[in-house]
Image 1: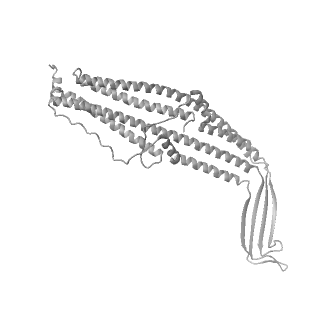
Image 2: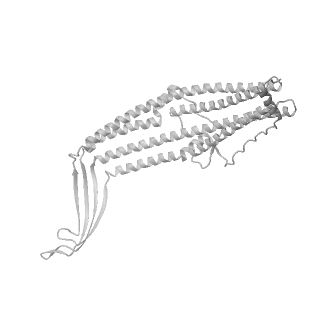
Image 3: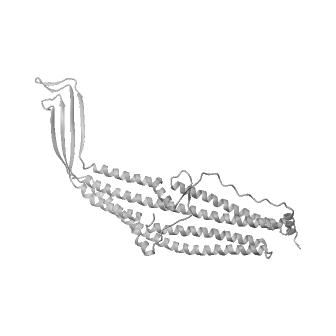
Length: 430
């Protein structure tokens, strides 16, 4: 017999209140069918269509165009010139016309650089920048592939969470149906039905949240693949076997970002060595055929002239010393950046290897915990149906099973992400 009036009032209210209706699952949004791709297909599509990759390719084209521009500094050039002159009257001296009132003149000027040290070295530097741009484009592809794989794995993980929530909803629905049937048969308690219904509503809330996150993950994957619709992932994710720690550390220098930093040292060193070109003379041959109409006593109608033009830099106001110091600083910066980048890459390998080992161990434990939690739920259901316990134990066991399944799905995602990170850090992906 209940002694406290508040507890008695609560029980009476539950018994006299009409049964609550079970909320129907929210309908899935009517969206276009998602495209389903494998991980390899997703990465390839991202490399083919992603705007970031396209921009990197355009940078390579720009660097190639700069090589053409630099090469023009030591290749021949040909220009045509023309002029028309109107004087107020003919210029006559001693009966001879020195200049006509109307004059037409034209010439072609061909300049052939014979010694053009600055043009030569500029071309070498431009070619070096082209190689760096190509290596940077390769590194961009690596980063896009990594981001795409991460997004793909996230979609797979969200599928796992949705599946776990759906299983939990089925379990909660079965428990509610059982409690409701017992109540209708006169052998159950209204509070058991309310508890079961509250648990079912909580599971439904979790399911809808996971479905929303799955939709966001699909959209993110579609954006990376430059698709006009969300893109879904196939359930199987196959990653290459991870390397050992020594193998990963040895492969670090082959990473595209480390290669770019090393190439910048070479480019800076080449630029520093090319300072001599600012001290070298410039020698060019200039040829100029011309036409003059009407001819004069000093200027025939047709003719040509040729010159050798030598330019020797004597004093430039400090330009050469400034260039030298500037390129020394750039070279030092490139060396520091390479050392820092290599150190960071090796640190990433060590950290990612440790994270992979711990994630694999956590995955094993979380799967064991999920298996045991489901076993505990089965035992709680048997005990409740046998009348040995209340449904509080069932609901608590169901909640623990849901949490364990969610933790297992999250651990599986972390293990995949850790393996992917190690492959990327060691330069083995994509």
